[in-house]
Length: 87
Ligand SMILES: [Zn+2]
Image 1: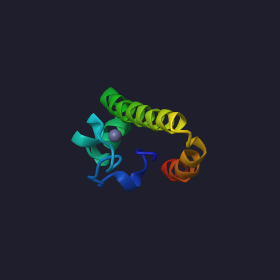
Image 2 (image 1 turned 180 degrees about the horizontal axis):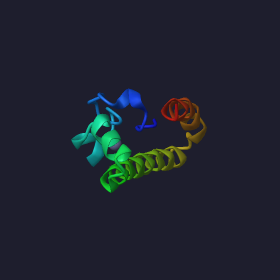
Image 3 (image 1 turned 120 degrees about the horizontal axis):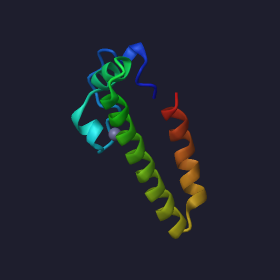
Image 4 (image 1 turned 90 degrees about the vertical axis):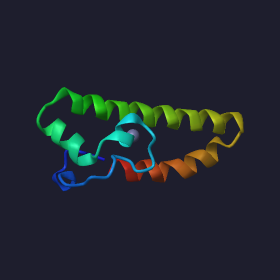
């Protein structure tokens, strides 16, 4: 997701409605977009908090899949999800 896109200007949902990070539980896409477009450093900090949380959760799921010997199934599940996220 590119939160800087104009379509998020009045989007008051979190960046990711299923995410439990500080940014997603406290701020809207519109607010984060506003901060980033105004070059407020808080915007990048909030985006970074969300990104780090996402990758931390993704790696935890990958580790669990490896330990449970189902990494190939994990990849089959996650690759379509990751493709949708970067759209
Ligand atoms: Zn988040």
